[in-house]
Image (cartoon, rainbow, N blue to C red):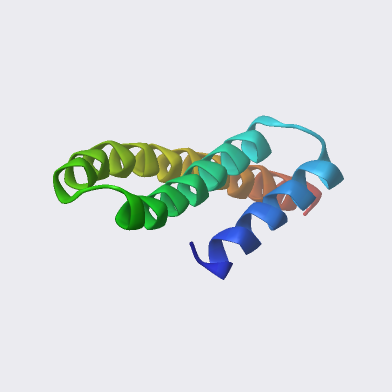
Amino acid sequence: MSIGQVFIVLITIYYIVKSGSKLDGILMLTGSCLSLLCSIFIQVGALLWEAETYAFSMYIISGISTLGSVLFVIGFFLLIRKFLKNTISTN
């Protein structure tokens, strides 16, 4: 778990509070929370599980983390598209 991941979760929560629960914010929050939870499970699993169990669980956790990253990127691209659309329409 890193401070950067916690920061991104907090920023996405702030964005949702300010703009309302729209699809881009929900996707970014879901993706960042999934990635944060996966990084926590990786750290805890290294301490608690045996090597074979840890190796097997890493495959599953990595897949879930990848899904979280994809969700975050989709939400981020939707946010950028909305921002560019609003910027172009005001000019």
